[in-house]
Amino acid sequence: MIYLKLSVRNAKRSLINYLLYSITIIILIAIMEFSNCIAIMGRLANFQTHSLPLLITIIQIILVGYIDTFMLEQRAKEFASYLLLGMKKKKLTYLFLCEISLIGLFCFLIGTTIGLAVYVFFCFCTPMLERNLSSFLPYKSIAYTFCYFCLAKACCAFHLKQKIDKLQIRELLYEKNRNQSIIQNNNYKKWAILFIFNFLCLLGLMCGIVILPRDWAVYPTSVVCIPFLLSILSFYQWLFGYLYAQRRIKSIFIYQKNWLYHTAVLTSNIKTSATINAVFCMCFLFAAFSFITGRLMLQPEFQLFEKGTQQWMGIMQICLCIIFTVTYFSILSLQIIIELKKASKNNQILHSIGRSNKQLALLNKQQIVIQLTLPMLMAFLVFLFCMPLLNGTINLILPDTMHNSLFKFAGEFFLCILFFYTCYFFIVNTISRQYRNF
Figure 1 (tube, helix red, strand yellow):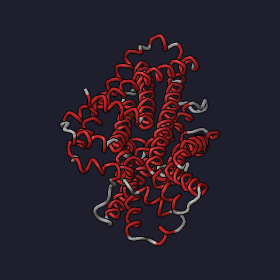
Figure 2: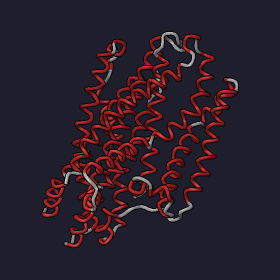
Figure 3: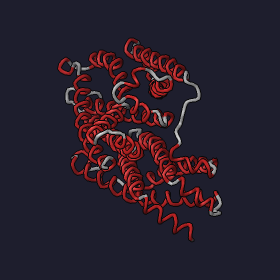
Figure 4: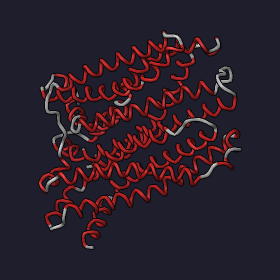
């Protein structure tokens, strides 16, 4: 009982950290519930939409796993103290997992309520869907969301348990300040070769889709996602590995302006950072593809399916764009806030050696811009090389009045992204001011 009281007391002291954790879970659960509602209505309309919630579950596992690890780092010294007082590691592990699960359950209730409310509001705002609202059974979507939520929490809990079981008291004492590293400085060259190979395969398959007859184009279309995903993962592994290697060999450009500080921040946990940025890049690309497809389906001049069916598909794609855009900016912003909070001691050191508050503010703004932009780098490469190929193919099946529509819709999407980018930049910068006030 005394250990539980200590845990609750320390949890209250870490209220800000748990607030970030709770907001993240609530956003993901709301998106999950909304996507399950779309999936159920899509099946009623004879569409195969069951893969959407599963995809979001995978994203949730990765992002929640990252935040769980952050919470472990924040409370590592507390756990080491419990072990020194005689608590068994098994009991400590279950106590922490129970605490995380209770917070997750509370977030599940709020998130499902928000998700259902948004879906009902969306149906009433869309006359075509209002008539289907009577056939919608909310308990099905809640049950599916709960199953996916339990799956995500089980995977994260298993990983967290494995991590805690392997840590010793001494490692727990230094876990908060421990950085990841690459064993070999030349490891990034292997990732560069893998990236070039996968990206060339992606471009080759895209050319096959464009050049081959429609009957033969089905084959490259069915496997194009493999080099697509592998090229994203390998790109960010190469990028962070390259920055780490340049930092170790003390390259000249590292010492120009503030690059040494930014490189040190980016490469402090390179394995996690590479994976997280790859996931965010996928979210960004999925949002772009969904927006462009949805806008295309909603064009009256473009008739590929029956009118009602095509409108449903277009609306569903726009909903997917909203889901992935909110996921991208909300969770990425929370991650940046967490990183800025962890770097507050660095700001104190910089302030003590002569950096002014104005210079620290500029440094933090640069860090926010870099971290908001990094996941978009690979997306820009994909758009630069793949969009012209797809645009030429789409023009063959579109009427003359809709030629180059892909470029037009892509421009609209990037204007929306610019709006979100500006808003979230000011939000994160405003919140981060509390970490540089001395």
